[in-house]
Amino acid sequence: MTTEPLRLKLNFFDDFWVDFRPGTTRRWFQPAFQTHYADIDFMGNSYSSLLYHPESGKFRLYYEVSPDWADDSVRYLALAESDDGLHFTPVDVRNTGEKRMRRIVYDGGTGVHGTGVMYDSRDPDPARRFKLTSVAHQKERQGSVTLYPITAAFSADGIHWTEPPGECVVHPYSSDAYNNLFFNPTTGEYCLIHRGVGIDRRISMRTSKDFVHWTDPVLIGYPGASYNSDLTQMQFYSMWAGWVDGIFYGLVWWFSTSLVDMDFPKMWGTMDTELLYSYDGRNFMRSSGRLLVERPAPPALGCFQLYLMGMVENRAGDEYILQGIGSKCTHGDSGESNKKYTEKLGRPTFASVFYTIRKDGFCGLEGIRNGTQVILKKMEIVKPDISFNINAAAGWARFGLMEPNGKFLDGFSYDDCVPFEGDGVSVTPTWKNARLESVVGKGQVRIAVELNSAILHAMNATVRPWTTERQRTFGDPVAVM
Image 1 (cartoon, rainbow, N blue to C red):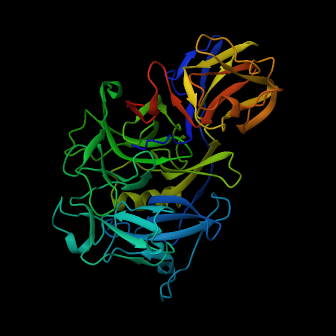
Image 2 (image 1 turned 135 degrees about the vertical axis):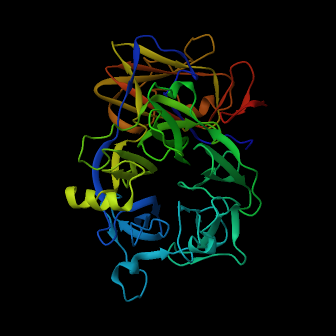
Image 3 (image 1 turned 120 degrees about the vertical axis):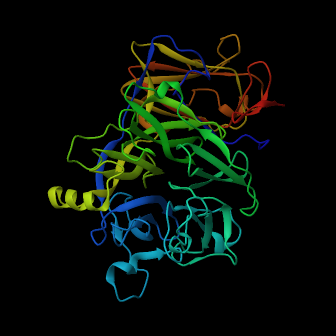
């Protein structure tokens, strides 16, 4: 764990960092569907990664395609780009005779499966700026259920990829799911989220400091009793996770199968997405426990499978773009069934879908009367960089700093604060005659917010928890100073 605290984000999913919040209620919000992208030259899109490429100023969508949907064992990784992160156009990157194959950036030799792509600005080697993990060389390894290792490839531009000599094996076994790759700034490690094969579906993680030596897998997610029902069995099909400007978000896929049908193994079912969150990138907690997005009614995209696998900020920095796959048919349908769906419903039956939501707007604490308060537990302010994500478009909000006993610090009361009226994802509190610099490193402080017809979504700050012992970071609750 890092000894220096990162600028973190407190979303008010729970009350762990809150001591008092009289007169408030918690509200949950869902992302809104915006559009879809379907590569009409292939049967449908599959596992995909959405990222922003600063050198080109474009959003990129890396997605798997099957030239022949009846043979799902052969997929290739294609590329599309966008100016706004929502409306994508395929990019020709190869000079080849078959037009649709010109957008293929990586074929894994003889096919890929479950490819995850990341842009890594931290790597000092420009040839490794882009990294991907995939179950590659599919045709060469057919005949074995488990021995399809997850391997890595690297690229300077995200278009021309190189596999290290002898292959860079990240996980020696297969993972028939989305193999998500991200960097954990709290531990300084690369993290691979994958799934075991030949067992019930659940989520594991391997980590590495150098992208060469990887830890053994650690199980980080499987459905417990709260997922039970009388007719369906819940399995965790896959999971995306990443560090998003101060907090780890996770998108876990619910695979709901039948406890009535005799199906060995479980292949038929629906897919949904649940939002998780984490302070350390290892231990993920449930948010609302409900679906992040409700599946629409048939025949809309996502009516039977809606699994999201990525989240990035929009260009303005005030919304998140979430992307994933929407399907009009259930998991387990054969290639022949998909052809029938296509004939009946029209293309696409599978496509990339895009949703948006206010930045950190998944939930918020709403003041249900004027003068309601949210008072946090005791903390140490390390840097004068506190900001709030708050919607006071129909009211106003005021901010304060308190001593541990609840008495306002001189100059930092609600009455000393310049009220905020409006709507902003990064609102800096100001006081008439005091500055945050004066309280940096000065011991235990309570941060307080007064809500007057307003909703508090999140707080960003470089702080340390300090209830009875001064902690190093929020991500390591056992380490004290």
